[in-house]
Length: 407
Ligand code: F3S
Image (cartoon, rainbow, N blue to C red; front, side, top):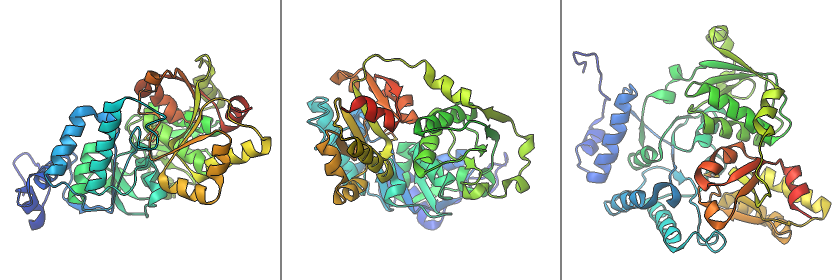
């Protein structure tokens, strides 16, 4: 149906219309109406089924009493996920609450949020859902965590818009997303080019390169030429940082992204704004950081991979050192289980390292516990720690953490 203004509403099947009209109850109706409304705004023609939803906004520190109250209403109204669904971590869980003791209300509020999400059907709490269930090329997702969206679109060749936490929750309920934005091939093309002349030396510098790309690109999809990654963790650090300072949902990296292959034959790359990033740009971002005595080191934003945890365990074993200050690793439950099976968790904990599973160290008021300065190799953590945790930061790569935080 075409209206006078040329506006074409999102087409709904008969089943979708029934949900839209409230035949399955108010929760499904609300979820459907919100997704359709966003689809309208995004110029979508219809809805499409999704294979996996991933929800953000799980921390009590983020959503507070208002968010919890909305979740309670939705849950008691019958909200259940109709597709495979994972969610970001909260701030504390029952195992970490005695260590990060943010107060009774904070802890009980967080516990209730996690229980509600579990009841709705969340299978795992992690910000690296791609380690839990690797997306396949071409698969349609409704993901809300920026690092995960960037990994899905840019590395795995799956398709997801960069959703808000609430929208992903509604999409998980109805099992559909709108066919607009990054779901459509014509929107998955570069809008700005970065030539990376710099040679990042470690995860910190890959992250800083990502921060620069994100800040300059804003919502535009960048095409990255000239960067080489030594390992998966470097790509993850780069994309996570870009997704923090920028609003894009996809980055096309030459030699890495499936959809970057042959792009020069399809798009006039030369006509796009082109930015060069040099070594001096990477150094400039971290050179003036200062925060006095380091209180703790934070590894695992996004949640640490097996690779990086094993690397740390190897370094401290070789040196025969023990943590002299708090050193925290945040990872996802299934990565933890694998590490535990292979004895890596025992190696680290016997050396004084704390390993937390399924929680996030960044979205909590660390300053309320007396922490002032946190060392981290993660540019994404660095971006958010002052804003969300109220603490200052300095960058430290793994070898530097081992040198300065262990004796
Ligand atoms: Fe994950 Fe928390 Fe960082 S949710 S990406 S560890 S800010």
